[in-house]
Image (cartoon, rainbow, N blue to C red; front, side):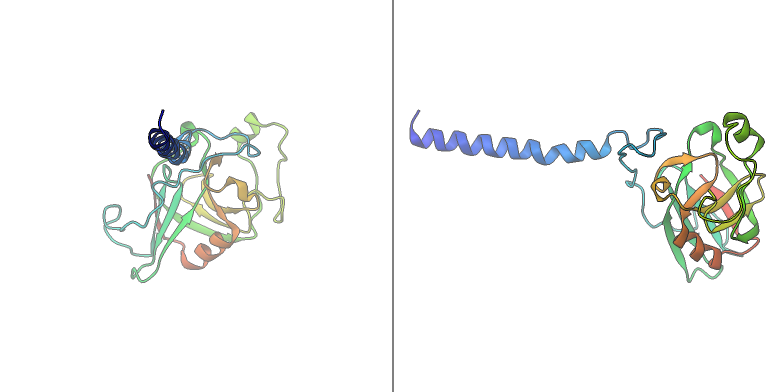
Length: 197
C-alpha cells in the first residue's frame, strides 16, 4: 500500500468512525424514553422531545379563569392566564402507569399552601406500610402547595423529591418542582379549567 493510499484509508476510517460516534448519542437519547421508571435511583432518559410551547386554541374554547393543559406524553404542564398575557411551561411528573392515568376535563376546586397528605384507599391497599397521614413538611409527598381538582384524589402539587420530575413516577397526580407549583399557585384560581391529554 502506498503512502497516499494509506493516508486515504486513514482519513476514510477516521471519518467513518467519527460519523458512527456522532450518531450514537442520538440513538441513546431516544431509547427507553417512555418506559415506566420505577426505581428513582436508576439513570433514566427523560422524554423532552415534545417539551415545547403550545397555543391554547386547539385545547380550549376560551381561557376564562385561566387554563391548564397537562400533556402526559411529553410530561409538561402549560398554563395560560385569563387574558393570555401570561404563558408558562413546566416540566412535570405524571402517573406511573396507564391504569393510574386519568385524561379529560376538570377544574381547580381548592388551593392549599402547606398541604397535608392522606393516601387513598387504593394506595394503602397497594402499599400497606405507608403512613395513614403525613402533615405538611419536607416528608410530605405533596410538596409545598397543592391545587385540588374536581376529580376525587387528583391534584397538581409540588414535590420535595426532585428526581420525580420528568418521569412516570406518581400514583395519579401531576407533580411539579416546588418553585414551579409555588408560581402556578399564585397564577391559577379556583375555577381554572384543566385538561389532561
